[in-house]
Length: 95
Image 1 (cartoon, one colour):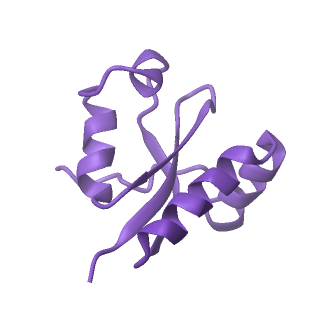
Image 2 (image 1 turned 120 degrees about the vertical axis):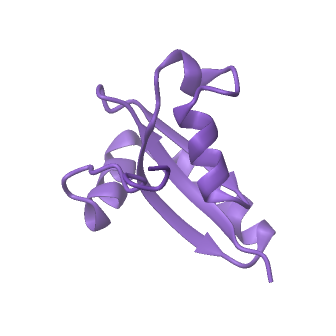
């Protein structure tokens, strides 16, 4: 059974990026190392502040689209419901 992850990453300015992946560890690493050019590289988005998982790829994609459609305030409320201090949830993953 596969897992799919919907995740939100940020930077020191709290710029938000929402994505979906089937390998959260690899994908966060790619963001942190700026391996893939684009928004997260340009804005130094390296901190994982929220994620959820599902076994259904269609559910994951729909959820990502749902979150991306939300106003910033609602995304912040989602993050702070599980991570009120905006800690990097991937701290220690790559030590």
